[in-house]
Length: 70
Image (cartoon, rainbow, N blue to C red; front, side):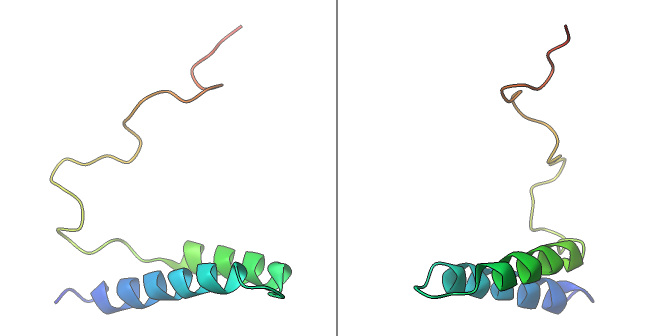
């Protein structure tokens, strides 16, 4: 197993659990926002093989407001 796989999986699971917590009645939204941002930034590089060969997350369709020049 790659050296960062366990960290990636653990952080990904924590993000999922935080998302569930944020949707519960009475949850602290400020806490969820701060911790969610910190967890997302701390994600290590995805493990090899998670994405298909040649995958580029910046490729894809233009979204409204992108690519427009006056």
